[in-house]
Image 1 (cartoon, rainbow, N blue to C red):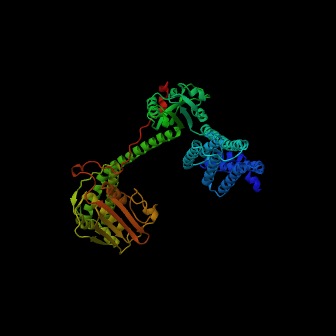
Image 2 (tube, helix red, strand yellow):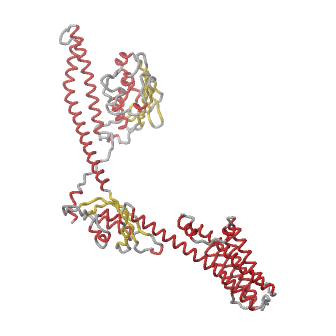
Image 3 (cartoon, rainbow, N blue to C red):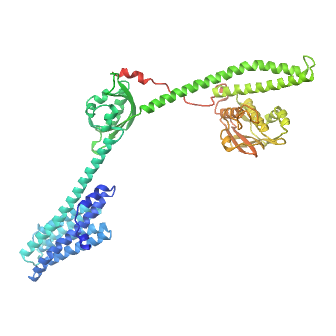
Length: 605
């Protein structure tokens, strides 16, 4: 088993290593070659040993010295290889060749002999199996051997005493052995690399032929050198039909300038480009001659070549059908346009119906208040109770209409901010007075916690008062009887912190994440316990966003809720003299225009 491993020279395994691996293919090939070289050196030295022994018996020790040196070099380098000392093994083989060459050169008086030829093969072997450092060292050692041989020939140094016939036979046998090893190494490496290159080309060709995108390679002059099989499916034609002007004729006339510009950037400028164009797709089964155009994304990549600086480049183009994506974009743009029109219609409807309801509701509230106050005459107890209910319901409807109008203004981006500096703590007591009746009915205590030395706030005072009133109304509504609602004001960096805290029912995390959505209420349905439209916090959020502030909420079921509003002390990023300008709540991009590119297909002819 050991002998079989020692003298295994099969090339199929080596080539398979060179083809099947990845980044280590050349290294595996080099290591196998080093081992084979050692085995060859051992084999030829062992075969030459009987003849060397015969020469020794005949009185010449030189052949056995050469054979022993070759055998020792082969054994040592094979041992180093088996210990995975591959660089040392390569250096050992190169040194063995140099020593053999030097020995044979010194044995011959002539400068140009077989020994010098063997020494010259050492750098050749180093270039095949060695690293850069070994190649450099081999040339330096060869120069030393040549210098030694030249010195011996110039000064007449006596050669090693050996019979001419024995010297010639030994030199020729050694030369043939070393030449055979070098040639064998070169052939094996070259054959393996040819197989590897062929496998690479086959793999790339298979990839190009079976990739879903169409692949076309252009020459530096713009001619088509290669077209993949997938391009036939993309364009509905044979590959040869794309050559010449076939590909350019398929471009939509409106997209040809963009394509030519992008191709020139890749071909002449060496820049990669990606464009989207319309191209004609043939359908042999179509009953009409009307051309069908599809959207195609073309990725143009120049083939960079260091030797082609300043000249035109070959270009590889990938063609991808993106018609479905374009249709989806058009559908989305149409849906967005329809949604925006619907939103505008809703806002107009709310504004119109709000104004129409406000006038009669004002009359209802006013006359019912007059009736309860006895201006029109004394009423009976029952009538007075009815008038009070009418007055209360009218005020409730008026408040709902006011909130609807505010919400429609905010959503339409027509809420005007009138910013000016004011002391925000001055609005707390008036707001308490506005909700005092509601708090008394709920048996809720209102508490103010205001920090000292607060700076003036640059904001719309009317909007800030509405923010605080809405937060107070919500906190009172969801508080338990006998509870407490706290309003705190303090400075937080460059913002003013306005917080309203209650100890009421609280909210679940999933409801907390939807704070600010219009018409959202924790309890939906007809059986809900708390009245309201669900617009209070959405209006607060809209007003806070207009001030470029932040709305935060923390809540726990059964423990209460804290809503915090952070308003920039210096006001939103608008100038005071421009406060009458419209500040949109949602800055959404305009809907993309609808391109009826399908209707332009006849223009391509």
